[in-house]
Image (cartoon, rainbow, N blue to C red; front, side, top):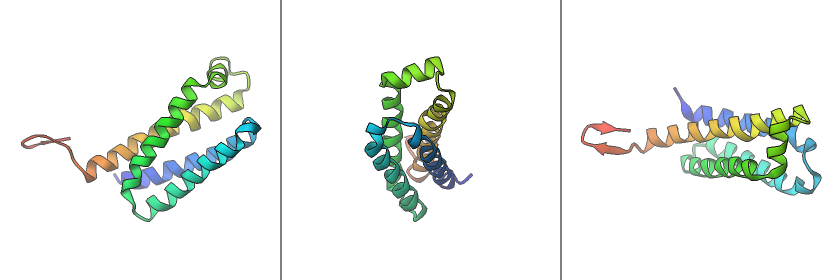
Length: 124
């Protein structure tokens, strides 16, 4: 399976979900949302061009998004109460599921390109 394409597809899905989510978000965080969106667009383009070292950046950004969503009090409240169901679904899909997929697929590409040798004859 070509995990490099799956990374690209996941990034495109994240961009689409973010474009849906930005209008529903808090207006005071609009600048940060746009910067993050531009990061994803840039990563998508560069990964499409074949720059595999940027997969490390994908992992770092996705991890930061997951941690940020997990420690933000409004996000915790939204996920536990589902007061605004549309916002909660977009947060869960874009903020956890797609980010987790991005981490997984990026790791798969990295491990295929740079295998870890644990012992003679056994490769991760």
